[in-house]
Length: 287
Ligand code: UTP
Image (cartoon, rainbow, N blue to C red; front, side, top):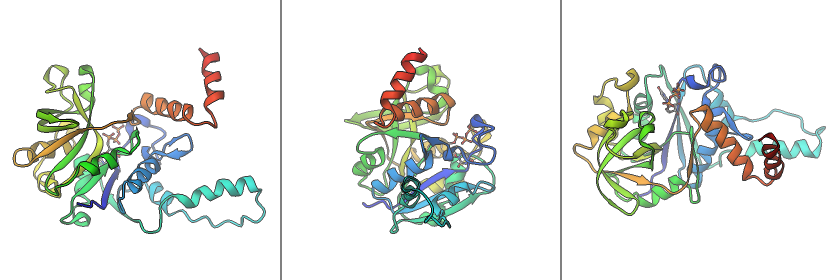
């Protein structure tokens, strides 16, 4: 089954990053020199997705501007070095890939954001990527998940092992059996107290859904944090449908938190030969 469509919900308030997110979505914050959303888009394109759907906030056009950017510059007077830097701007999205931008009028929650894509998705299965979950892996997590996705009626959600004390930051699954990295999910709870967490597997921001998810997104009302929670729709879906948790291979950085964002910048810079040696030296001296 070839899944072509991918939804990027980027309309959240990003309140943990205020004031940086007053006028731009947190998905525009850069890891070194590239915004989080560009990492997510490159992951999706590399995994073979060709129809990108962005759920954007009413006043936050920065993501649309980023991907539509056509510089109107006379570059003849620029130095070669600057011309090389500018060539980076043209490499964002290949021509065969289409982009759709849908406005979520109010940030009523992740579930509500995804529901805005219902008409564009139609009958097909589709992926969802949360760009603030930056995952360094080879092959990419989306590619790993696509390889496991065979049946259009079966959804897959990415999971990772978490510490019990971290359960308040995750949707946490319960499962009946597991085969290699695939866990047959039986329940999911949004941000449970550690003593109520059904397992030590938390959901992270990569999903491939059957389009049936929309039926359940339409049924739910506001949950934890007074938001329309994707987790609650998955929980309802589980009553009648098979959903697998997929324990991916790779290192995930939670860039929705300041610490995770700082760690991601350091980690990516340490992996970059342009900065690694000097940065190591700098950190050594600092410590
Ligand atoms: P988060 O739970 O991280 O929320 O959203 P947030 O609003 O972005 O950040 P904080 O908690 O205020 O700091 C997870 C993903 O869902 C998107 C966000 O943009 C992020 O990619 N989202 C969330 C929406 O698109 N719309 C919403 O109403 C809520």
